Image 1 (tube, rainbow, N blue to C red):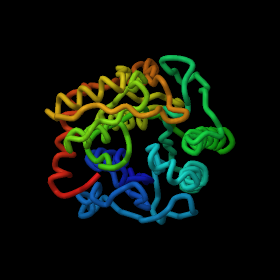
Image 2: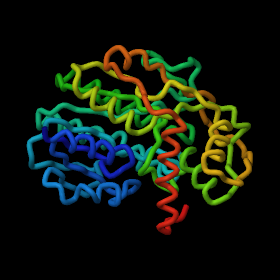
Image 3: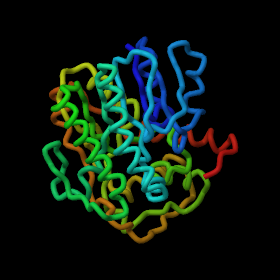
Length: 315
């Protein structure tokens, strides 16, 4: 197949590029590198089945080649980044999704939307099933990301209904692993870098808020399985094991052998108190569930960041 992946130089996008290339597909990666990195895709540049297009997908674009899939993964996804670039975040979720859907329609290709657990906001139902409509502020500081993804799902469903477009939607919960940016502001990368540099680990609130952490290899396996089924949307993909943020911090200190202590800071506005996916549909429909334990995935991620720091990259 010939597959376009927007955001293909990003953390998840680059892992997906590798998996799809390894399966014998041709991949076109579109990225403007606002949060992606050429280092993530350097190993593919000499691959005859790989093509890079540097482009901001919030502006219209056209692909010469025939396409079997348009997979829209381009997004400013970490709180640190989307709080700094709220308008660009909205544009990638709204205009970018519209442009990608139009391209899929023109090419008679299938469309894949990478949505997010953030569409559930600060949930009042736990764990979060796909049927839950969410508890989201449409004007809060996080709304640029949350609402752009909610609108992206709505646009995708509109193209499915009006144009009979073959679509898939996955709601991705917290994912971690190698190729995360060293300064992306996410909790796993923050804690690992702080621990490796013997700095205090910054925990917001009392650290009793929970998250679920899925290793990136497990996630991409679920994405590929989603491509192989008939239309079924949306589906949660994530790890149903729930951890307190304070427990994550202590685990990372232990795995790194760090002398770091924990420093508590005020809880950010609209920060979700609990986050855990109900993946019963993914288990039934995809025969999928995560296989990599948190400690195993963290060990691999710690080694990745150690190498980055040894090579002179700074947080």
